[in-house]
Image 1 (cartoon, rainbow, N blue to C red):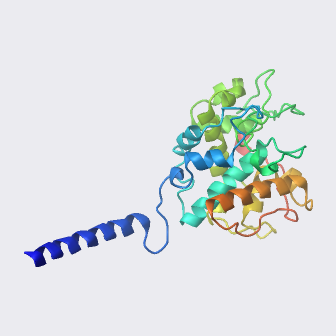
Image 2: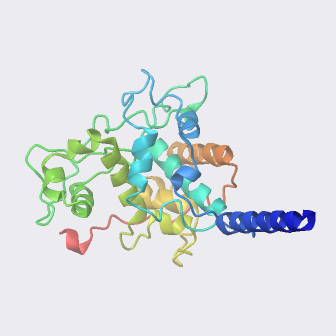
Image 3: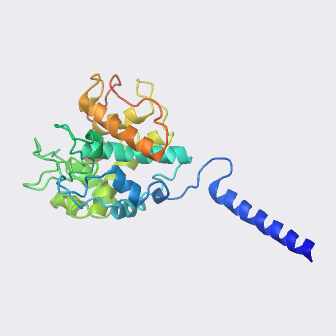
Length: 283
Protein backbone atom coordinates (compact mmCIF):
# COMPACT_ATOMS: atom_id res chain seq x y z
CA UNK A 1 0.00 0.00 0.00
CA UNK A 2 2.82 2.38 0.88
CA UNK A 3 4.58 1.54 -2.42
CA UNK A 4 1.37 2.19 -4.38
CA UNK A 5 0.90 5.59 -2.72
CA UNK A 6 4.50 6.53 -3.50
CA UNK A 7 4.09 5.50 -7.13
CA UNK A 8 0.90 7.55 -7.53
CA UNK A 9 2.56 10.54 -5.88
CA UNK A 10 5.56 10.28 -8.20
CA UNK A 11 3.30 9.99 -11.23
CA UNK A 12 1.33 13.06 -10.19
CA UNK A 13 4.53 15.06 -9.63
CA UNK A 14 5.79 14.07 -13.08
CA UNK A 15 2.52 15.22 -14.61
CA UNK A 16 2.72 18.59 -12.85
CA UNK A 17 6.31 19.11 -14.01
CA UNK A 18 5.42 18.16 -17.57
CA UNK A 19 2.52 20.62 -17.65
CA UNK A 20 4.79 23.31 -16.25
CA UNK A 21 7.37 22.68 -18.97
CA UNK A 22 4.76 22.74 -21.71
CA UNK A 23 3.38 26.08 -20.59
CA UNK A 24 6.67 27.76 -19.76
CA UNK A 25 9.04 26.16 -22.27
CA UNK A 26 11.68 24.30 -20.28
CA UNK A 27 14.35 25.18 -22.83
CA UNK A 28 14.27 28.86 -21.88
CA UNK A 29 11.99 30.04 -24.69
CA UNK A 30 8.71 31.84 -24.14
CA UNK A 31 5.37 31.49 -22.45
CA UNK A 32 3.77 33.24 -25.45
CA UNK A 33 1.23 34.94 -23.23
CA UNK A 34 -0.24 38.40 -23.82
CA UNK A 35 1.39 41.74 -23.11
CA UNK A 36 -0.08 41.56 -19.60
CA UNK A 37 2.40 38.76 -18.86
CA UNK A 38 5.24 41.17 -19.65
CA UNK A 39 4.05 44.26 -17.86
CA UNK A 40 1.74 44.49 -14.87
CA UNK A 41 -0.38 47.49 -13.95
CA UNK A 42 1.97 48.29 -11.08
CA UNK A 43 4.99 48.25 -13.39
CA UNK A 44 3.20 50.28 -16.07
CA UNK A 45 2.40 52.99 -13.54
CA UNK A 46 5.94 52.88 -12.15
CA UNK A 47 7.28 53.45 -15.66
CA UNK A 48 4.99 56.48 -16.06
CA UNK A 49 4.96 58.02 -12.58
CA UNK A 50 3.70 61.46 -13.65
CA UNK A 51 1.09 60.47 -16.23
CA UNK A 52 -1.76 60.66 -13.73
CA UNK A 53 -0.61 63.76 -11.87
CA UNK A 54 -1.51 67.42 -12.29
CA UNK A 55 1.90 67.97 -13.87
CA UNK A 56 0.76 66.29 -17.09
CA UNK A 57 -1.78 67.72 -19.54
CA UNK A 58 -3.22 64.28 -20.32
CA UNK A 59 -3.76 63.40 -16.67
CA UNK A 60 -5.81 60.23 -16.33
CA UNK A 61 -6.10 59.56 -20.07
CA UNK A 62 -3.54 56.79 -20.59
CA UNK A 63 -4.55 53.81 -18.49
CA UNK A 64 -3.12 50.33 -18.22
CA UNK A 65 -6.55 48.88 -18.95
CA UNK A 66 -6.77 50.79 -22.25
CA UNK A 67 -3.29 49.60 -23.23
CA UNK A 68 -4.13 45.96 -22.55
CA UNK A 69 -7.50 46.21 -24.31
CA UNK A 70 -5.91 47.76 -27.40
CA UNK A 71 -3.21 45.10 -27.55
CA UNK A 72 -5.90 42.44 -27.95
CA UNK A 73 -6.63 43.89 -31.40
CA UNK A 74 -3.03 43.13 -32.42
CA UNK A 75 -2.37 39.66 -30.96
CA UNK A 76 1.17 39.39 -32.40
CA UNK A 77 2.31 42.40 -30.36
CA UNK A 78 4.52 41.31 -27.45
CA UNK A 79 3.72 37.63 -28.08
CA UNK A 80 6.21 36.88 -30.86
CA UNK A 81 9.51 35.14 -30.10
CA UNK A 82 11.34 34.52 -26.85
CA UNK A 83 10.57 36.33 -23.62
CA UNK A 84 13.66 38.48 -24.26
CA UNK A 85 12.31 39.57 -27.65
CA UNK A 86 8.85 40.18 -26.21
CA UNK A 87 10.17 42.35 -23.39
CA UNK A 88 12.37 44.32 -25.76
CA UNK A 89 9.42 45.02 -28.05
CA UNK A 90 7.36 46.36 -25.14
CA UNK A 91 10.29 48.52 -24.00
CA UNK A 92 10.72 49.85 -27.53
CA UNK A 93 7.03 50.67 -27.96
CA UNK A 94 6.85 52.44 -24.60
CA UNK A 95 10.20 54.15 -25.20
CA UNK A 96 9.16 55.64 -28.52
CA UNK A 97 5.68 56.62 -27.39
CA UNK A 98 7.03 58.12 -24.16
CA UNK A 99 9.28 60.37 -26.22
CA UNK A 100 6.37 61.32 -28.47
CA UNK A 101 4.28 62.34 -25.45
CA UNK A 102 7.03 63.53 -23.11
CA UNK A 103 6.69 66.32 -20.63
CA UNK A 104 10.32 66.02 -19.56
CA UNK A 105 12.13 68.11 -22.16
CA UNK A 106 12.91 71.82 -22.08
CA UNK A 107 13.61 71.85 -18.35
CA UNK A 108 15.48 69.85 -15.74
CA UNK A 109 13.06 67.71 -13.73
CA UNK A 110 14.45 66.50 -10.41
CA UNK A 111 13.94 62.82 -11.29
CA UNK A 112 15.37 63.16 -14.79
CA UNK A 113 13.75 63.46 -18.23
CA UNK A 114 12.90 59.77 -18.69
CA UNK A 115 10.11 59.66 -16.11
CA UNK A 116 7.74 61.97 -17.96
CA UNK A 117 6.24 59.87 -20.73
CA UNK A 118 2.54 60.03 -21.59
CA UNK A 119 2.08 63.60 -20.45
CA UNK A 120 0.36 64.75 -23.66
CA UNK A 121 -2.27 63.22 -25.90
CA UNK A 122 -2.32 65.96 -28.54
CA UNK A 123 0.44 67.93 -30.26
CA UNK A 124 0.87 71.39 -28.81
CA UNK A 125 0.91 74.35 -31.20
CA UNK A 126 1.11 72.32 -34.44
CA UNK A 127 2.97 74.22 -37.17
CA UNK A 128 0.65 73.01 -39.96
CA UNK A 129 -2.58 71.14 -40.57
CA UNK A 130 -0.90 67.88 -41.71
CA UNK A 131 -3.21 67.63 -44.71
CA UNK A 132 -1.96 65.88 -47.85
CA UNK A 133 -4.53 66.26 -50.60
CA UNK A 134 -6.07 62.87 -51.28
CA UNK A 135 -9.23 61.57 -52.91
CA UNK A 136 -9.23 58.45 -50.76
CA UNK A 137 -8.54 60.23 -47.48
CA UNK A 138 -9.93 63.75 -48.00
CA UNK A 139 -9.27 66.39 -45.38
CA UNK A 140 -12.30 67.89 -43.70
CA UNK A 141 -12.57 71.66 -43.71
CA UNK A 142 -11.06 73.24 -40.62
CA UNK A 143 -9.60 69.98 -39.27
CA UNK A 144 -6.00 69.57 -38.19
CA UNK A 145 -4.47 66.11 -38.45
CA UNK A 146 -1.71 66.85 -35.97
CA UNK A 147 -0.23 64.31 -33.57
CA UNK A 148 -2.63 62.55 -31.23
CA UNK A 149 -2.38 59.57 -28.92
CA UNK A 150 0.70 57.66 -27.74
CA UNK A 151 2.33 57.59 -31.20
CA UNK A 152 1.17 61.12 -31.99
CA UNK A 153 -0.46 59.85 -35.17
CA UNK A 154 -0.22 62.56 -37.84
CA UNK A 155 -1.47 63.26 -41.39
CA UNK A 156 -4.89 62.62 -42.84
CA UNK A 157 -3.79 59.48 -44.70
CA UNK A 158 -2.68 57.84 -41.45
CA UNK A 159 -5.97 58.71 -39.75
CA UNK A 160 -7.76 57.37 -42.81
CA UNK A 161 -5.80 54.13 -43.03
CA UNK A 162 -6.22 53.38 -39.34
CA UNK A 163 -9.89 54.31 -39.59
CA UNK A 164 -10.36 51.77 -42.37
CA UNK A 165 -9.17 48.96 -40.09
CA UNK A 166 -11.96 49.69 -37.61
CA UNK A 167 -14.63 50.70 -40.13
CA UNK A 168 -14.54 54.36 -39.10
CA UNK A 169 -12.49 56.08 -41.77
CA UNK A 170 -14.96 58.89 -42.41
CA UNK A 171 -15.60 59.42 -38.70
CA UNK A 172 -11.91 59.94 -37.98
CA UNK A 173 -11.33 62.16 -40.99
CA UNK A 174 -14.27 64.32 -39.96
CA UNK A 175 -13.29 64.35 -36.28
CA UNK A 176 -9.66 63.37 -35.60
CA UNK A 177 -10.13 64.40 -31.96
CA UNK A 178 -11.86 61.06 -31.46
CA UNK A 179 -8.37 59.73 -30.72
CA UNK A 180 -8.19 61.84 -27.58
CA UNK A 181 -11.71 60.97 -26.45
CA UNK A 182 -11.12 57.22 -26.28
CA UNK A 183 -7.89 55.94 -24.74
CA UNK A 184 -8.31 52.41 -26.10
CA UNK A 185 -8.73 53.79 -29.63
CA UNK A 186 -5.66 55.99 -29.11
CA UNK A 187 -3.57 52.95 -28.14
CA UNK A 188 -5.04 50.96 -31.03
CA UNK A 189 -4.00 53.67 -33.48
CA UNK A 190 -0.48 53.62 -32.05
CA UNK A 191 -0.34 49.83 -32.34
CA UNK A 192 -1.73 49.98 -35.89
CA UNK A 193 1.21 52.19 -36.81
CA UNK A 194 3.61 49.89 -34.93
CA UNK A 195 2.39 46.69 -36.56
CA UNK A 196 1.83 47.91 -40.13
CA UNK A 197 4.62 48.14 -42.74
CA UNK A 198 4.41 51.15 -45.05
CA UNK A 199 6.73 50.53 -47.97
CA UNK A 200 9.65 51.05 -48.16
CA UNK A 201 9.55 51.02 -44.35
CA UNK A 202 9.18 47.73 -42.49
CA UNK A 203 6.87 47.58 -39.52
CA UNK A 204 8.29 48.46 -36.13
CA UNK A 205 7.12 45.06 -34.94
CA UNK A 206 9.06 43.16 -37.62
CA UNK A 207 12.22 45.08 -36.75
CA UNK A 208 11.99 44.35 -33.04
CA UNK A 209 11.15 40.64 -33.36
CA UNK A 210 13.90 39.92 -35.88
CA UNK A 211 11.83 39.51 -39.04
CA UNK A 212 13.66 42.37 -40.78
CA UNK A 213 17.42 42.16 -41.28
CA UNK A 214 18.37 45.45 -42.91
CA UNK A 215 17.94 46.75 -46.44
CA UNK A 216 21.49 46.98 -47.78
CA UNK A 217 21.38 50.79 -47.66
CA UNK A 218 22.90 51.25 -44.23
CA UNK A 219 19.72 50.78 -42.29
CA UNK A 220 20.24 48.12 -39.62
CA UNK A 221 17.87 46.17 -37.36
CA UNK A 222 17.54 47.61 -33.87
CA UNK A 223 15.91 50.42 -31.94
CA UNK A 224 17.50 53.06 -34.17
CA UNK A 225 15.54 51.73 -37.15
CA UNK A 226 12.32 52.30 -35.19
CA UNK A 227 13.25 55.97 -34.80
CA UNK A 228 13.88 56.08 -38.55
CA UNK A 229 10.46 54.61 -39.27
CA UNK A 230 8.71 57.08 -36.98
CA UNK A 231 10.59 60.32 -37.60
CA UNK A 232 13.69 59.58 -39.66
CA UNK A 233 13.32 62.51 -42.02
CA UNK A 234 13.83 64.90 -39.11
CA UNK A 235 16.06 62.95 -36.73
CA UNK A 236 18.21 60.47 -38.68
CA UNK A 237 21.53 60.89 -40.49
CA UNK A 238 22.14 64.13 -38.59
CA UNK A 239 24.61 62.97 -35.98
CA UNK A 240 23.88 62.86 -32.27
CA UNK A 241 20.88 65.05 -31.46
CA UNK A 242 18.84 65.58 -28.27
CA UNK A 243 15.70 63.99 -29.72
CA UNK A 244 17.55 60.77 -30.44
CA UNK A 245 19.11 60.75 -27.00
CA UNK A 246 15.68 61.18 -25.42
CA UNK A 247 14.24 58.22 -27.32
CA UNK A 248 17.18 56.06 -26.32
CA UNK A 249 17.04 57.20 -22.70
CA UNK A 250 13.45 56.11 -22.30
CA UNK A 251 14.14 52.80 -24.01
CA UNK A 252 17.12 51.99 -21.82
CA UNK A 253 15.19 52.79 -18.65
CA UNK A 254 12.34 50.50 -19.66
CA UNK A 255 14.69 47.70 -20.70
CA UNK A 256 16.33 47.89 -17.30
CA UNK A 257 12.95 47.78 -15.56
CA UNK A 258 11.99 44.72 -17.62
CA UNK A 259 15.43 43.18 -17.00
CA UNK A 260 16.32 42.73 -20.64
CA UNK A 261 19.32 43.80 -22.72
CA UNK A 262 19.14 46.76 -25.11
CA UNK A 263 20.17 44.91 -28.26
CA UNK A 264 22.28 46.55 -30.96
CA UNK A 265 22.00 49.65 -33.19
CA UNK A 266 20.14 51.92 -30.79
CA UNK A 267 20.49 55.13 -32.79
CA UNK A 268 20.07 56.37 -36.35
CA UNK A 269 22.60 59.19 -36.08
CA UNK A 270 24.41 58.06 -39.23
CA UNK A 271 21.64 55.98 -40.75
CA UNK A 272 20.14 56.98 -44.08
CA UNK A 273 16.70 58.40 -43.43
CA UNK A 274 13.58 57.49 -45.35
CA UNK A 275 12.30 60.06 -47.76
CA UNK A 276 8.73 61.17 -47.20
CA UNK A 277 6.82 58.48 -49.03
CA UNK A 278 3.16 58.65 -49.85
CA UNK A 279 1.55 55.32 -50.55
CA UNK A 280 0.15 55.13 -54.05
CA UNK A 281 -3.12 53.87 -52.67
CA UNK A 282 -3.41 56.87 -50.37
CA UNK A 283 -3.56 59.33 -53.23
